[in-house]
Image (cartoon, rainbow, N blue to C red; front, side, top):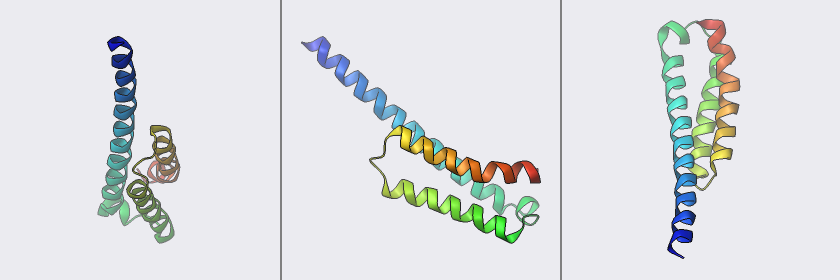
Length: 95
């Protein structure tokens, strides 16, 4: 009986850990992108429309994270992919 409970809690703990790691990764990526695009070397080279699109995407991801505290790791990872799909092409063009 104790072994079954231990296995159950281990599985729950692993899921929580995965969720926390996904949230931390999204938060870190968003802050890094915000800082990257605020850097004069990169930010000043961006078309204002691109810059606005990126800022909106970062703000949207952070707001989503604030309002979806119970989101699972998969949902958070999907939000990360969405943010990366917006930021990455612009980084590649400018760096």
